[in-house]
Each structure stands twice: as structure tokens, then as C-alpha cells.
Image (cartoon, rainbow, N blue to C red; front, side):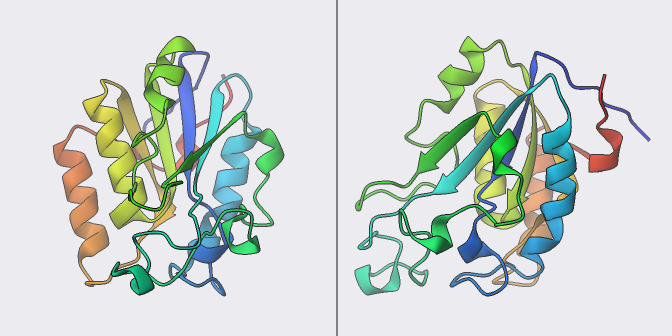
Length: 193
């Protein structure tokens, strides 16, 4: 069992832990809210940068079925469904990254169309710990883009959940992330320095 003690060169990215992706939401991930406790424990660890991404869509976003997309309406900016899960300790988040904020562009990754990579580099971050929703979409895209941007990536396997449109989607996403050089760990292996 590995042990990680994050410091000033490390960052935590909580991907899209929003109401609409949790049970009761319009695009609920099965057991999406089951990761909140682990995420909050990570957010309590001092000494590293804490980032949260969020879908922040206009009401007529291209990904929505009414516009020809594949998803139901979800995470419309400034609606309750776009808010972070009510039990997530969002007060400990230092940087919120809003993505897919324009009608005509989809963005699964927290790096897509945002300044996240530059902001992390400017803060001296070299290693990222990634958790959140959903494994097979925004977590995967964020982790793969982080690797492409040159960051070391550790995915916290107990603090992610998959949509699983196809039952193997989550498993396949984990395989893709491993193939790209992402490490995997349990959140309990991440402790205060």
C-alpha cells in the first residue's frame, strides 16, 4: 500500500461533484453521492491546492437532447442542479473551474477551454490527485488531459463513480487512464504530511 503525503507541489481536482450528477439529479450517476465522505476527507488535508471543476451550461447547451446532444438538461448555470453536492465541503476549495460555459462547445475535461493547466503550473503544481464524477466521462477526460499537459496523475479509485451507459464503460475508462500513465490509489493512502 502506497502512502502519499501531498505538499505545495500537489493539487487535488474534484471533478463535477454536482447535484445533477448525484441521485435525484437529472443525469444521476449511480451512487454518485457515495464519494462525498472521501472527497471531504481529502479537502480537509492542508498544504496542497484544492480545485473543483463544474459543468456550467447555458440552458440551450449543445450536449442537451433538445439541441441534438445525447444528454438530458443538466448543470445549467446558477440552478440548484449545477451547485456542488450540498454535503461537499466546498468552502475548502481554493479554485472553481467552470467548463462547457458556451452553447456551442462541449467540454468534459476541466482543462478544455479553461486556464487550468496554466494556473496549476503558475502555482508550481506537478502532481494531481483526481476524484469525482463521472469516471467514464469528465474524470477520464480531465485525467488524460492532465497527463497530456505533463502532470503526474493519481486517480483516487474509491472516490469516482461511472455512468456506465454500457456496463463496461467505467472499467474501460480506468484502462485508458492506466495506459496513459495515471496511477491509482485509495483516498485513505493520502495523508497529511
